[in-house]
Image (tube, rainbow, N blue to C red; front, side, top):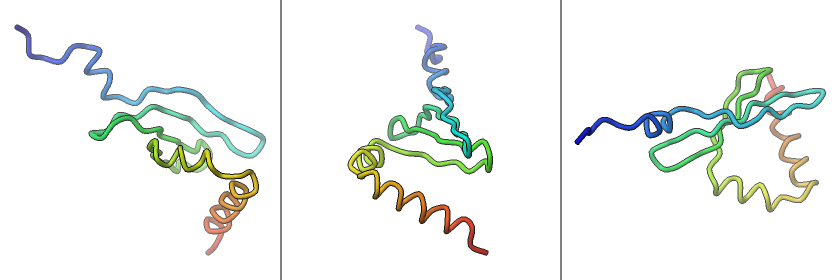
Length: 84
């Protein structure tokens, strides 16, 4: 019996590109990222290189935001980034 991981198992340990989301002021690559605790979404800003890992709990919380709450959250993050 062969105990080495199959090619599909080995490939599962690598990030899988899903899509690219962009608009006039930003572009973000979205990848599926395996961790020891399950799959996460890896977001990579193509402008700054900043990265964020989001798990299902965070994604579920984002779904509950109203448009105005989401706007306030983004505005606060941008203001934090601009501070000297």
